[in-house]
Length: 102
Image (cartoon, rainbow, N blue to C red; front, side, top):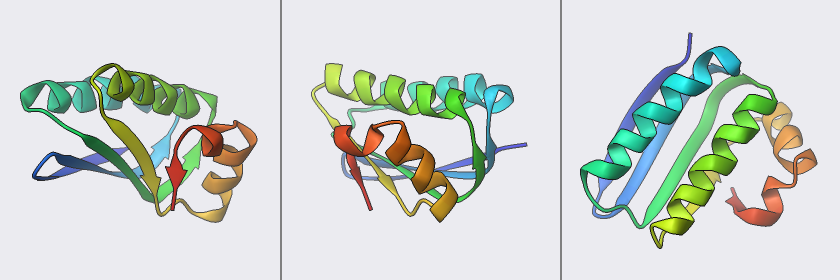
């Protein structure tokens, strides 16, 4: 089961994900993040992936979808603190060319 927590500071929304980001978790995460984006304007969405233990292609799809949503809202997105295995998936999928990963 994936846990989601949020921290909002000015127009920056940081989403902390903990657990496995797979096809079982993606719909809930998508809806939860999108709800936060609607609450008040966000200029930067940060996905903190330091506690993500597994991610498959549906996780990549989730990230691309939130990236496109932020772009359409005039904002940007970055990924923070991915572990080595998650970083490998992000690089292989080409996400590192779309957004900052730190």
